[in-house]
Image 1 (cartoon, protein in one colour):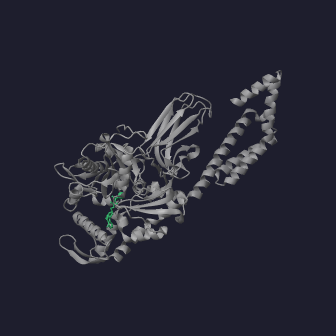
Image 2: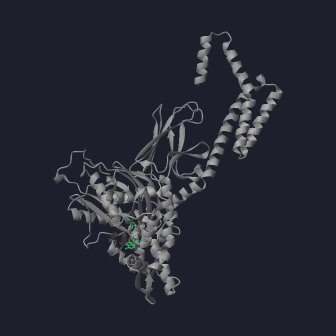
Image 3: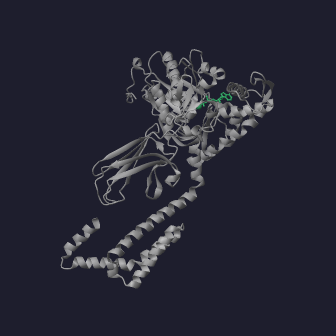
Length: 633
Ligand code: ADP
Ligand code: MG
């Protein structure tokens, strides 16, 4: 990425040095580009006068690529080569395709690396290629509109995008020749557009229901500081699903069991979408549906019927709403505003349900389709140095905890979820074995206590550690998450300075809803997991005590113990071993205590003996020095 000179406060660039930067809402369904002109954010239009450009790309046989409305028109005649909803696949692996809408509508090549590719007549295209084509188009719209080069773009992503998805978005921008000033979360951009940071204080919910993603965020304003307290959502829920539900309803009305031909499926979806959008304004819509060229259906669809069809989907958005409030530790009554974002929030049932849920009127003043692009443009303008007096600060959060695997297969959380980013957190670790010269690090993501239940992000090794006794080496592990949510983990041995680090661009392959599931599991299993962790810790402790006593017994047990005393200790050792095989934490704990108590005399005799040995024929000073030395080692 090109380096940008950001102006210091009070050093505004001269007018002729104005730097044009844009904000881009790279949506699943529609994409928009906006810029700030004479202090006013404006959504830019293409030559056809459209501002919302359908995120659809058509690949022709001769290799030519069309984007937007023109591409959308190819969907019916050439469905396989007309790619839409590619955003759903950003940063995903082939395994994530199964059972998705995309899998049912396109052909994929899943053999080349981990990223699935759409098979088109112009060759295989990954989601990154498709997004890049869209970004290229938006870039062209912008350069034509501002009449010159751009210094860069702020691109928005759903709050729930993980590292891989964010990285894929950056890759697409790079391919399109766009310099990314920053990636920001869509809900955060919406809040910027509303200027909510100008409020002295207040807590705001942003409800964003688009075509393919649902995001819910709680933002808090405090003296110009803009903080995302918590986020939740569903990366596979939106207006597309409303369309599917409505197609099912239409089929039911028309007495059609299945639409086989892809072009007809596409036409049905487009028809459904038009009906749905019309029903946001009208109570009834007259439908003339050409089903497959042979059959057709005429009739009326009412808003009430639509409402019934989509009610379960709308309800599905409410549990993340509930959770985000809990995560942010906020009561509904404490919310100062509920902001509606995304085309699907035009549906009256959505507005009503959300308003009812949060027990207040919802904000729809700024066009919910444009609000994200507008916020991104404001942010871009600021990052390009055109607004040096602004003190707007954006803080985002990481959606899932990041940590390391420790002894016993336990996950040690280093950066807890919902920590605001950018963030750097360091923690010290040490070696387990004497003379150990390498340390394997396993970076994990998730909320569960056991590594086996978390997502593995990366493994790397720190080598060249100077050989020392176990526990004497100090290794600092640093977790850094940058403003775009990308993670770098580094490990440094403090004495020698040897360093190893890894940029985590996690394997493309976190499936849709995985974050949801991981969060839900962590709640469902929280008590269970804590129990497992305590058990595991108790076992590690028992192991430590057994090891210490056994080696002492082997060294000089016979010198200090009668055979009866020895038997008593041995039976307590057996009791600890037996209890550690079971799952009763208290039983292990009390067996360990019994063993420690039962061997206390033995331990004391050994100490006395070693002191006596030291004292023999030596001055007190020398003994003290020797004792100190033995304590140090
Ligand atoms: P994305 O962020 O996923 O690109 P958008 O915010 O552009 O999505 O929203 C697109 C969705 O909004 C589509 O499903 C579209 O049908 C829906 N939509 C747009 N206008 C309306 C409307 N008037 N009534 C209902 N839904 C609408
Ligand atoms: Mg959107």
